[in-house]
Amino acid sequence: MKPVLPMSVPVDRVRMIRRSIRCFLFGLMGAVPLFGVGAAILALRLQRQLAEEAGEPARRSAVNGATLVACALVLMFRCYDQAGLVLALGILLSAVQGWLLSRQYRRMEPVEWNPARHLAWWGAGLAYAGLNLSVTMVLLLIESAIPHR
Image (cartoon, rainbow, N blue to C red):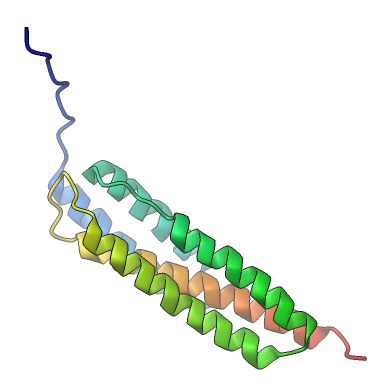
């Protein structure tokens, strides 16, 4: 007897396309440092939900690992009083995360077809860039508020 495969849940493609566009718009708003943190978090959450709905694994371990490494380097540069290097690192981190996301986008093929899939990934990339620049700006503000010896 052949094993019976479970029925897949039908996906509303119009809803998926609209959510992809919404994810891009949230990512675009989230790219604004400090003011767009809430929108960036919404964009990342929506992109993860879209990936699960489309049947593609949303792996963020490399992107999140780059964030942890950058935070450690930022603290190290802060100890040596190098604000310019902290800013350069924030920009460089955004570029590295964008490159890692583009590699993941090209490698994965979703089960469900979504013609606006690239917009969701762009939204996630812009959201990560906004979050990185927000953290960098907060660290620079803290740096400027602390009196130097």
